[in-house]
Length: 273
Image (cartoon, rainbow, N blue to C red; front, side, top):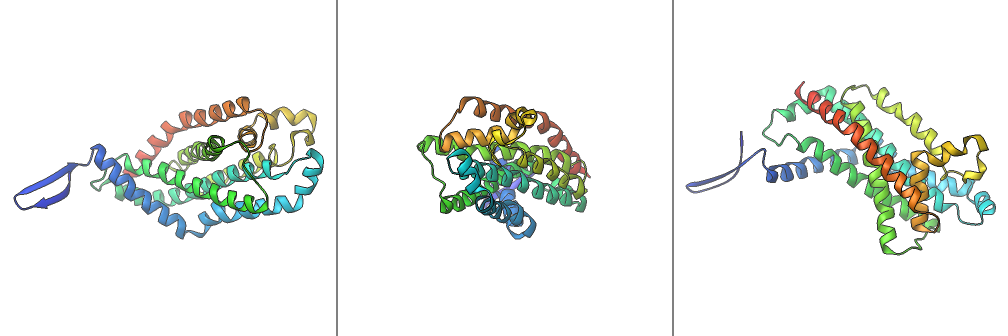
């Protein structure tokens, strides 16, 4: 099948739907569709933007002073990274619910029979997720800045700080997508929220590691959200960077590698139904 691009007089120029140019163009169009749908969906906006910002304000108001007295430094350098990661994964759950609904409604199947690049559907979701996570991170950083959060390690460290939530969020979105394309029930995807809530409350971004009981400290210290928070804290303020940054990349890339193939296979099957 061919996609018509231009018809000028006697010359008709066409482009194959499997070409790289078609992939880029169709991905851009579907990315725009997804972003517009998410913006117009109250649940997605609530989970990706509003709730994380309110959570940051609440944490600084309720426990910020106590953590400052306990550690001698602002609690924002733990809570801002934690909330950016939480916003990334919470938004992924909301987007996974919408994906399940599109599968159940047959929208994915209708896209499959259109003359569009087959890879553009899943690629556009990756690009849209990255845009959503980045926008959410900027919104949370703006609130954090108003509360007193600052970067002290220079521009390269700041850019790497911004990249960590995107990588972590994309890894988590891959997991959610793998579940959503095989089961359209929102309850299954939303059930992952329980896991993310436990990760948030038992992370070094919620309270310092020393505040947890000794027997659970190794779990808290090495779980995915904690290592990401520790890496972001080191990039913004100070502290050991090599270990948490390495573990963050290991956790994120491992999740992508393990769930990318099931997500791709499931998306293909869901599109053919």
